[in-house]
Image 1: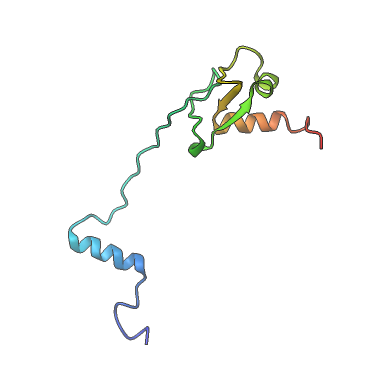
Image 2 (image 1 turned 90 degrees about the vertical axis):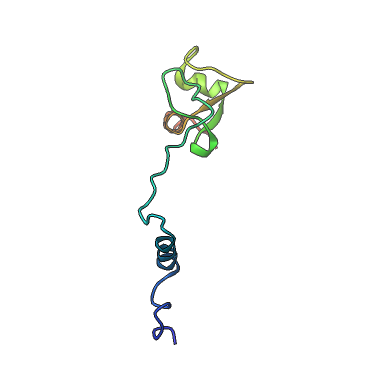
Length: 100
């Protein structure tokens, strides 16, 4: 039966924690390093990262001109790489313009 043995009372995480302590490793949660990105946001006034893994997106040059105007961003091959915060701003600004 499950409740009769000691090993069955704890879950797999508690059992793994006990094994780590037996090996001499600390049981404290290790602090994660802050993720560094590779692509900077193309909006000149923004210092965030535009990596896809961090929520960044790529929007067209024309859409970026509608929201931020000419000269306030850099483009690569007609696309503008934006961070998550700038993309949310873009979505808010263009919300009413969409036609279905």
